[in-house]
Amino acid sequence: MISQRKQFILETIIKEYVKTAQPVSSGVLVEKYKLDISPATVRNEMMELEEEGYIYQPHTSAGRVPTEIAYELFLETIKDVKKKRSLKEADEKNLENIFNKEGLALRQTAKAISELASGAVFWAFNKNDLYYTGLSNLFSQPEFKQVDAVCDVSGIIDRMEEIIDDIFEELPEGSQTLIGSKNPFGNFLSAILVKYRHEGAHGLFGILGPMRMDYGHNLALAEFIKKKFE
Image (cartoon, helix red, strand yellow):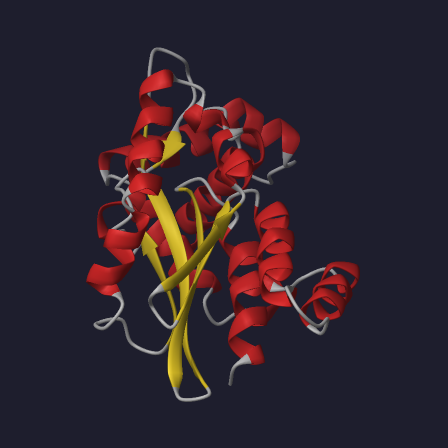
């Protein structure tokens, strides 16, 4: 467990990093978020957070970046807080309209969710029928500007059917979030998955993004799908 103040600072670092994809300095935290804490205190707390493995310095800049365990802790704090994982009313209404259409509604819903999630979305219907969309949204993220990172993601996409086959049966029904090293789609990604039963068969819906994803928002998108099949 970490102190409330440290947790607040860590959540603010995550919030800023998710927005900007830039390492976050103590000066940015104090100035931008008008923290009622002295810069020296913030620096000390950040040093301790780094020592405890929640943030790290990616290069010689003064900024810090959240680690996998920071995202895990953040996920625990938002899991049961509804207000931190809600959709805008207009987005939810738009998804409802798309989902309720005839024909290709599920695929169109997946496409709309991939846009809102700024990531890739896959939907496995009855395990053997796989649809995915939004790769351009995933590749447009700053993490994947480097050629080797694009190659890593491309390799995952090429193996997506194989990965889903491997995990499909063992996944429990309901939703879960797999971050970094716990994610079978790649330790540089996170996945939010929803496994459901519909008309006697299982389906699997997933959002794929960098570890620097907006977990609250994307969990709300996953919950939209979960509720449709409850």
